Length: 631
Image (cartoon, rainbow, N blue to C red; front, side, top):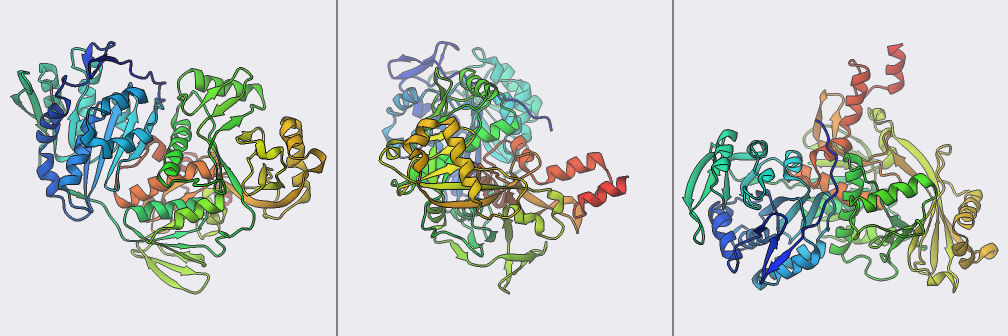
């Protein structure tokens, strides 16, 4: 599976013809003047028989709509409205759409003002609008409907999109105006991504479109056009259509850190009953520990960097949805300043901003060389975890997983002596994961770090933004600043070391002397420390996905045991997207990331790399032993 590199995006240039948006680049309007909602309902909703199909969904029903051009989002808003009106209350709609030139927020708002009847679905879309940030973006429109907005070329992104599409909206500027979006290659992709009996509708009846769909395998019909247009076409994939269902059940999450708490919350929001096991949750710390919401900017948007960008945007949407931080004791999300600590880093950030790979809503640079991430900041980790666990389907137990089976259901033995059965077990146990039998092949690395908690002064209280250099400095939370953090691969225990406090403060003095002085200079008052062990993978990406079953079938993965670990020093940023990825895959829902990112995070990637070096290697055996055997 060959990865792609996302190209920077150019926002749509809009010329308003009265109340109708039009593109001077393509010489076409986004919808029929004065009849946009009527045209969309007839051409897309009615032609795909959505009202009847929504009403026929079974309990836990799932319906997936795919679209080739998002435009103003009118089709999506009408589809969600129809779904809420006609589908069972426990059914879920996933609307997946591509857009090469996303509208600027002001133009999107102006378009949506014409449809006040759709305001309850329009408002959350506008609140979460990602701007021109390439890649996949998951937006929750309400508890039943979610939008996956794929920003970029549909010809590139749909091959990496979800399977099992039930209905297609083939929309975009007319084929004569925008032939690059009506290609036979794209039609073939849509056929592969379709479920049996999937339907397709479009306003066009161009001969090239009809022939392209037929060549892809669709059966095509021609109908009278809407609003004076001569014709339009519909199509379907041969075979009977069967409604899909998503899964729910009982899940056990091991670990109540950021990964565990976000995973538990994501599963609970999808209807799972969740037990979360942790011997020492540590939610009631007397001093706040602030973590920084941050991602490394890059203009080269391969799978790794698309993950970093997408995870940051996804985390911001989680915080918005959960109304967090709700007060100053929860943290401050009013901006982050990145001070590049070498020339290479400064050049990398500048290219990400100027090339358009990162939109100005997420990154801007200053003449001084500093970068500002206006939506970022820091959070009180303990308060955020507490908010995530506050859900009626989540039960926190002070216990830990001792061992587990690969059976169905999974048998879990706890250190407290309990014998539990669960449909799914998700290990969010960071570096301790490698201690479970047969999992040393993960090759997890640990790096000890220490954060210094400093008492605020009158001067330091004026600092409102988070500052990152080779370390970081957070605004005061409950009168405490966090200054961090050391990085030590030599020590394997999370013990507090006084020299680490001296190192953190000396680094702050060297790189940000004004902040060091505001904090008290030589008279800085240390209020406490926090020492912990970061867990990292060998390629520095998180390890997220189903666990290969080393004892029963080393060539397959288990759909019962899952991992969400190795977030390093970016747990606050990475874990919301990774939690939704785990919860969606477990539940049988479309993933919130492209398939290349899913593969880049999957635990099985390490098995594949080992087998390329040694075809006889089996997971569950020691990496060291295999190397010795190879000699």
